[in-house]
Image 1: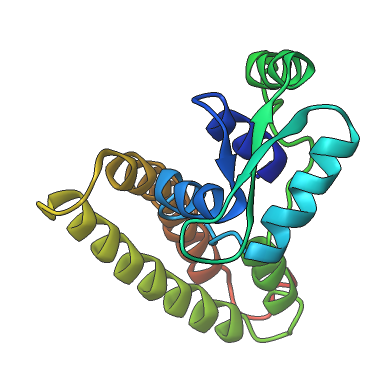
Image 2: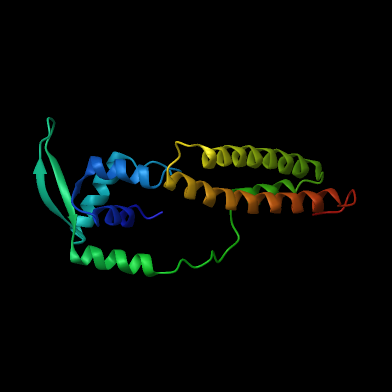
Length: 178
């Protein structure tokens, strides 16, 4: 996740202050980890330092002064470059799920790995149900639905791998080292 680029994207529609950017970020990425206010202001400071945003005035709407920020021409160029850059597929196989299975397989008894795989499959299946419910919720917005679609696709891939790995581990003859 590139919080600076998301903030630049949000500023593309016009100047905003930090509080508004944080709220817009959380609405735009409803299934992502919420952005902290401190992170918003620190990121805006770095973007300003790098010439990608500029202060665009202050307002005091019944509270403390709020500094609005606007994207600069250099910020638009950076955002265009970032959006146009294709994300390369991960060069290494990594992830907590794979690592835990591999470590569980290091024990002489493959039962530990089977237990972990079954428990993880249950957790993935439950999360899949939760995300499927989001897609059918009439109150869900478009961003909620496409974020759920993305997460469901990843869970489906994990579940396929879990099923295959469970079958492989279950088919191991007793005493065969993994």
